[in-house]
Length: 149
Image 1 (cartoon, rainbow, N blue to C red):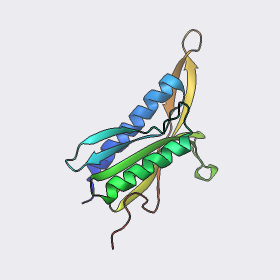
Image 2 (tube, rainbow, N blue to C red; image 1 turned 45 degrees about the vertical axis):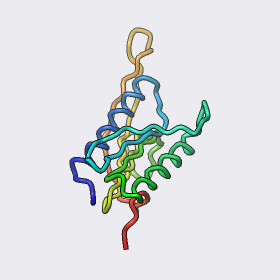
Image 3 (cartoon, helix red, strand yellow; image 1 turned 90 degrees about the vertical axis):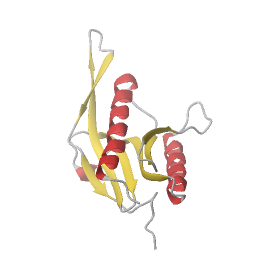
C-alpha cells in the first residue's frame, strides 16, 4: 500500500526541519531518516555504525539498507533519508550547499533538494542562521520500494 501525499509530506517536513535545526546548531549534520510505519505514524531514525567519527556515506548506506529491508518486509509505508550535499551544478541552484532528502514509497521516488546558505550572526559571529533557497525535486528509480511484478 502506498503512502498518502500527507504522509510523504510529513516525512519530508520532518527531515527538512531537523536538518535545518542541526545546520543552525553545528553547521553540518550526519545522514538520518524518517519512516511512516504501517499505522501511519512518522518515526525519526538515526543510524550508527559504531564509529565515534563515522563517514557520512557509510551511514547513508546503512540507513538505505535498513529502510530497504523494512520496506521489503512490508513494515513501512514510506521512507526518507536526509544528507548534507553539494548540489550538482547541472541543477543551477541558487546555493551550492543543500539538504537532499530521498523520499520514497510504493510508486513514488524523488530526491528533494533544499539549497541553503549559512551566515554568521550575533555580536561575535558565533550564531548561525540558515537561509533556504527554492526547493526542487528530481524523479529517480525506486531503490527502497522496488516495483512489484
